[in-house]
Length: 270
Ligand code: NAI
Image (cartoon, rainbow, N blue to C red; front, side, top):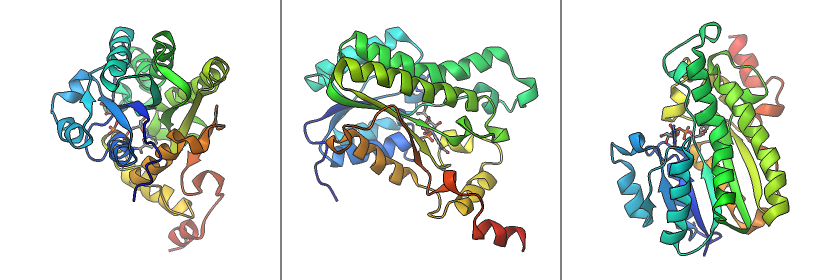
């Protein structure tokens, strides 16, 4: 089902690692909807070459970039404009990684060098992406920039560890840069707060299966899938959402406004 709502639009999609990735599903939909885009990921993530089949399907070029490196990002934005033949209308930041979570460090025993890495990769990189887009003058008027986040930015989920701080930083950057980019070029900047999703980054959090089931039962519509998230992203890149900016948009099947649900009560009284 395609309505060509991204026809003629150009963009960059960060973070398609494998078929489960939210960015992967987004690339498929963006292609279906008529967009042209560059795919990018950290050089180390491109080594497996899985992204090549996605690039081929979408007729997209792959340009490697570590999202923490200003040099890589500058090359990425400059080359993307060259390859796509003009300025960009959308950017998806779909990036997250915590060395502390990955290596199973408890929240009372964090490695602070790793903590800073978590903040840089998962939070500050969004500022770097936005600032580089501005400095290379890469965005068209009325463009749309999005990053993906999680409700652990507002509420405590113990196993989410230092990623909670990174997501708070990320959401705050969307507000501050959203203001700046609106004034500069009518560009909108938002975050989408997504349900737990079975991906490489998601299942890296310990106890993820229980976490996933709990959220599913606490959400009257159930957890939003990666594909649903991709649909929402496409709408946010389209001209139907031109006045939405500086928002943290909940995409969670109703989780964030539910106190308790019948499904949870049934589980507890079993
Ligand atoms: P994923 O593991 O498929 O994607 C994460 C991506 O980040 C990977 O492609 C990885 O290579 C990339 N990345 C890591 N370090 C990087 C760096 N230095 N430079 C450039 N790219 C780098 O997992 P998923 O779930 O698709 O994650 C996408 C986004 O969605 C992340 O921001 C994640 O925190 C967010 N999210 C995920 C949820 C979940 O349960 N899976 C829930 C809510 C938000």
